[in-house]
Length: 302
Image 1 (tube, rainbow, N blue to C red):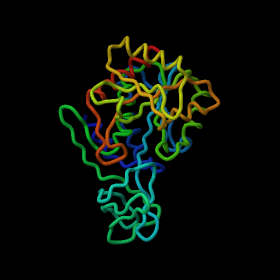
Image 2 (image 1 turned 90 degrees about the vertical axis):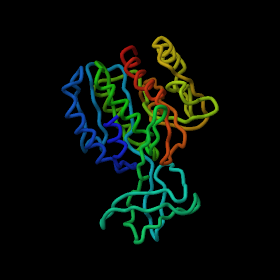
Image 3 (image 1 turned 30 degrees about the vertical axis):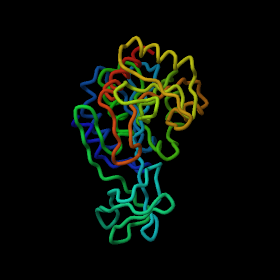
Image 4 (image 1 turned 60 degrees about the horizontal axis):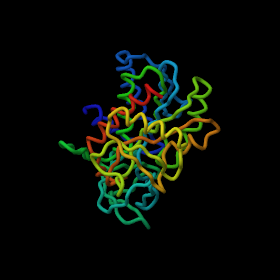
């Protein structure tokens, strides 16, 4: 869990993912020679902080977004949301502007958000939740489990994958935007037929802790039933615990796969959490371990 703790402490509010991208590239460079297959690595300014790893002859791509929700300073101590963070008065926020480190608390409600820092903060400064990681025998609780757990899952997959793309995307929490150029590059370089979205979903009346990784039949968007049925069939064969999700709302990078000009099937697969987009996101370790196990099983067989 040491590396998971490290990425949970990386700052990566949507649109400001460069440091987290550099951190992941450093990790990849240190570890890639120990993986089963040495990947081709694509990154840099042409990819706007996204990272693509090509292993062997891909049929499937796994996507994990590296950005988080947060806030941006405006004027007169005002804040505006980045993504959809929960507005809870008194929440501790951290960041940095031209004058130094910032530690403050959130004030107000959804109608007007501000901070209590004793000086003005440079306009456009991004602030994120102060991190507080807690783990016991049953749960991990922290800020940004969405989507640090997806990033960790994708990196663990890199250790054993023989054929496939592993892709780290940006901007997902605030409307997306990186997926179109990523998909075009993939389809022009080594095309795929399937996409798996390694992300985190919600605990609901039908999705509960300790019942396994969630396979989403639909959120706001509906993937092709034939493909989702194949995913469910493989999951059943694997013996890895899973549960099914049917929701009317919500979305992920899967939306942009579906809206792309490419005939790529997709499915969202991830653990479920409570306290979404707060400093206290909570995920079952049983469900997280099932997520870690199911991805290599699926990628090998699709």
